Length: 265
Image (cartoon, rainbow, N blue to C red; front, top):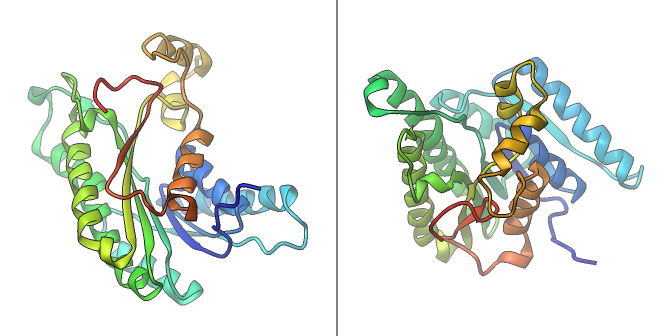
């Protein structure tokens, strides 16, 4: 058996109520981890946490203790971030893994963006990761190590025209990843980034509107060397592996998960 060694580990997944975050939370629950998800929509968040817990119980031993908790939080709000970590510390006594997954696609040209849009994206994609990382590092030090995963995109390495402000923020996130990896390697805190390509998620479903999202996915697949759109579970599997005891020699890496789409490694 390929044991990832995630049993009883405490993981926080931001943006954990939909899409990639939900798939990640589900993966950790199936591995026996204690899972905390956060998002802004309280009612939806609590419903999803309950669904993840029930789904894990159906697939695992009925006697297994499955812990999945939803704490409403806006990761762009410093007070919400501090309160979130405080609640996790009170309930579980520490945090082993932080998955900075919260974010939304924003792509436009320079002339169409105003300063407020730049700042909103900065707080969502950069400062949220900075704040939460700073808040969890003391716990990880006390526990003898940990892992931080930052969600990014290939555009953070190779930006296309009209990809602002996301490409700039994701580039900053990759710099943050490498900086923190170097700073905390001696504490056995590993920090890696996953550069996501075109992967099935709720944002694409919403963009499809009344149309069948599969039609959108089929069109997107034409741009991908492997000829298909990625699955949320593939992202979740990679996150779980990078946090696991099987990946303890990997830190400071930015891994493309995009079917070969990004032009740089």
